[in-house]
Amino acid sequence: MAITLGAFTKSADGSFTGTLKTLNVTASLIIVPVDAMSENAPDHRVYAGNGNHYEVGAGWSQVAKSSGETYINLKIGAPEFGPNWVRARLVKLEQLGEDGATHIALWEPRDR
Image (cartoon, rainbow, N blue to C red; front, top):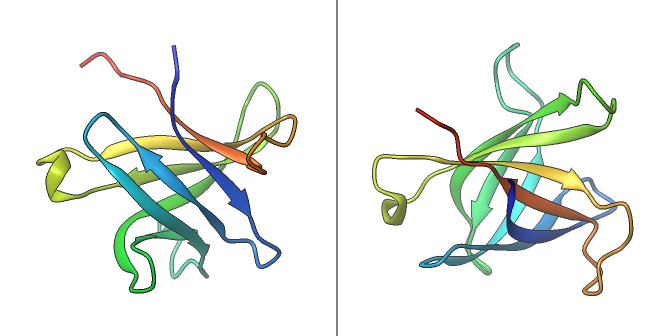
């Protein structure tokens, strides 16, 4: 079962703005496309904050095997998360959200 961590809106420049929400954290984020410097380098940078932006993560463009849809694999870190990263997928909504959102961030717990 995937859990929604936030709603995001895609801008004309390819960036996404929205809010990441967990039980303890609510953070405004912007996900910005960047030119990858190498094969494994991220395709996006994730920034937090209103006005002053602080880098808190990165994202890699992926293509879903079953649907062929493109999504972004996000890796977000902050002191509130301790030594662990929050890993989520930014996926396109089939219909525009009530708040104008075009994408949602989904988190799926993994067995270790």
